[in-house]
Length: 504
Ligand SMILES: [Zn+2]
Image (tube, rainbow, N blue to C red; front, side, top):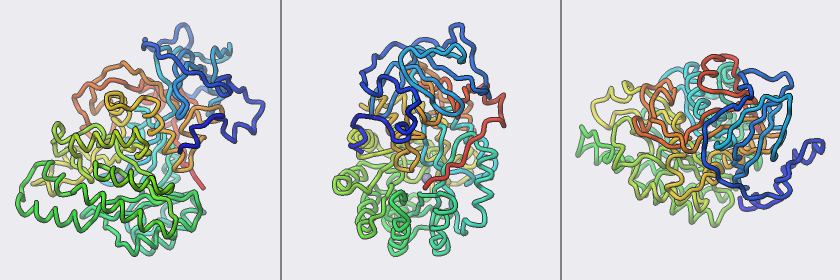
């Protein structure tokens, strides 16, 4: 992505509208100062209410904008309707609803490219509760995985209609492809529904998702790549046989284990590294772009780093839980996941991978369960994998990034700009430029707050980092031009609508 770091930084769609105000910094970008945070106040201006539009602009004054790949700048932001109209110094508009946000950062809305809904309870319920959890916590767009063994054509219209009706966030879909019937329909998913990303599993999840063999993987790579350069295949990369071998041995030795350390050993890091290498090798023939989901280990990162030097078609994701939870501290079975939470050394390697651009994006792998659903089982081995993560995604990363050597503007690259680019949403989403969607999150970098299930606002009764104090929280979210706070989201309820994002 080196090319995109160069100036001038004027996207094509912006050039075509010469009447739009071009802020000075677009021509000559100046480094911004870093002021101390203050209180979020309206300083005599009216606090905008939900649903305002009617041609009136919304003006955010005094904040610091984080523009991915550019830096941090003291800029006002003017929003009209559902789009960003302009950014600039000392913007004024006597007609606008003005909000003073001195001491706060303005980020492009977070794009979480990796969430699952409807796995452990019904889809319709989670489409409401989990997108609300996301939006309240700064995530305005979701990449939603749809899975199962049936062909998707009979149900996609219905699912998309539900998204438009019930979701608080904008949603794009990744379809899981596991069998021949689904494979045959891939071109229709692409042409009719604008679905450009697909997923498969080299290692399945026992009882939930089967794994595919290399011959099917090759068929899928060829099919996806034949559709065009905007398509991408997402892969869960672990070597199934190695994981199975380790699991059988450990389970036999410790049938009643309740230890997440045991769980980690049942998914050896080298199984992840091997599968990444194999998939990358197989992909060469077809030229398919591959996006490796949830890389979890130091060995995985080492493979990724080597491969990335030789190919422009490989992209890597890690997740906020892998970046912020570790086996020394977070051993509760509520944190059981596939791949597993690993050691501090693995975690350090993931942060390093972000810093040196081995890792492109951060997802959450949000898969909500209640503590009752998690702990119904007799032993570790039967606990279902998954956890609610989208509600703590942004706060946990804001809390940890600086301490792990990743500056805030780089974090925003990984959380917004990169997923938008890889999945075909940029620059409508993933950045702050005139003409982009007005999805923004206002962050107070010095706000310290306890992580609680109430703040995470998922359907689940627990959250990651529960009881820990985290520093750096979203204090307001602007979605499609609407100013939202937790209270206003509660009040407005059904009037906030997400969109289905058709791509391609
Ligand atoms: Zn997942």
